[in-house]
Image: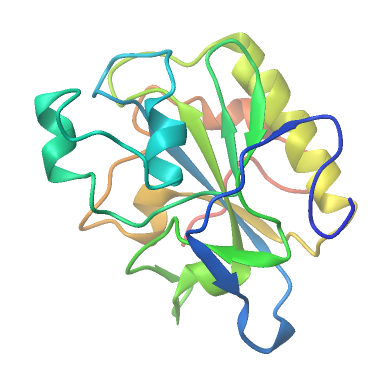
Length: 181
């Protein structure tokens, strides 16, 4: 990794990030699911959301979210393409109000990975393959100790990656497939 940027993936830099506090290293990976518009896949709307370029007139749902300033470190599309938006050395704005094992502000110490998907549809095999490979690569550079879903760190606000996400497929090295909060 060069400056927190992963080689071999497409980069679409997001302005929605800042420095991690006190040089904090990422120790948690947070898995999310996103689709824009909801339950529709493909297109560039996720990229536009993460780069503050979402057109509120393009879909009725967008009017309520176009002013959000959010990002993630990575997006894994339905076809397996990986896009990186934020250097892993910086804090992406993916977790919001969150807590992991009593520790608040998960953005400070996590890497956010979005999967193009939603709560009520299964994810693609290629997405799991790419996610496992990405986690393995990240573990080579960061002291990753746990995997969690957005719902695990913000259970009163979020449900993703949702009930269709197969956590058991994520046994990576000595990390269990999911470590409870």
